[in-house]
Image (cartoon, rainbow, N blue to C red; front, side, top):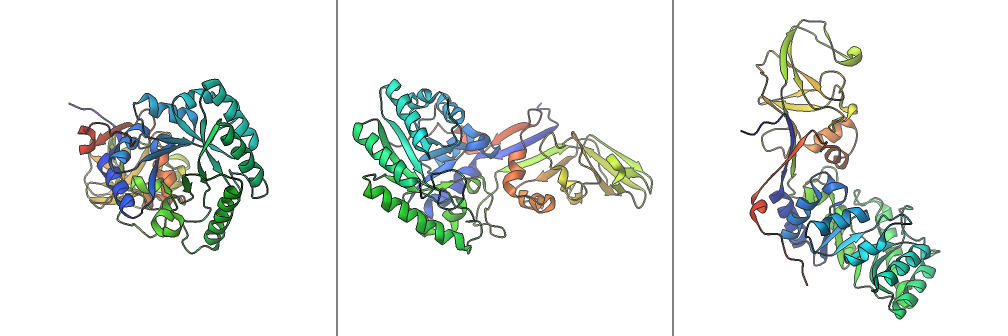
Length: 383
């Protein structure tokens, strides 16, 4: 008998099918972004499901994430792009990891590590087209591509990609999208004039993958969409959410009218009522901003968290409806049975669906996988 108190359920078939939908919508290669422990869906499991759905690349931020994929036996191409100085880059080179590079100093560090490994390092040169975060500015870009072209001529580097990132693709009509695409095309022209001809040009995130075919180039980088959540508010795109968060009621009790509930008594009962205590709190991922507003599905009805979200628990006022310890309370899921979704929680807590799912997955909340993908052999990386 499986005993559990709180859990996150991840439907791997949903991830596979979401990736298949994205692959069918583009002629470009699809990179599945599995950073942040697969947006808390499980990095390795999500990667395998995404590859089963047709993704041919995997994207992560850190070198540790990339190496963890290799240790799990995943051989598909992997790009890692958030790299501080002094990392053991040779381990990544030996593991056939591609690296994002944004400065000449970073490129030099890659070249040195490649020389130690005795092989050229595969890099994706990043240009800042308007996000003003990572990437070389347009002023510094010619110097970077010139240095990369020289290194490629010496055989110490292979420029596998040129890439950038969009600032506002979740707002399909935003004026910055066209401006960034124009800047990206100009950066590609500058690269070509310096003799850099990458096989992969990529700038589209999930939102641009779904709404801007002109941004697809050679590869798209799908993140939140592969987990079934829309990057564009109000649009679903036929995606199916993969994560469900739920817990069993710990106790229920009747309390009188005028009773304050939880810390600081920000909620007070208006009549005699039943409250249920649910063992999930902000240590497990429930946003404290969801105090008095977070929706919870319990015994066929949706209720609102009563009072402050605590570290380990929340309280729900169910009125006169029957509830007993062991009844299952669902915070969010795909919405098939009327339960709230991650989008509902994002609206309630004034945040994004990205943050809702990436909060969940503490050590004391078990993660359970379901779906036929579990029974399949790991996909073979494309040659």
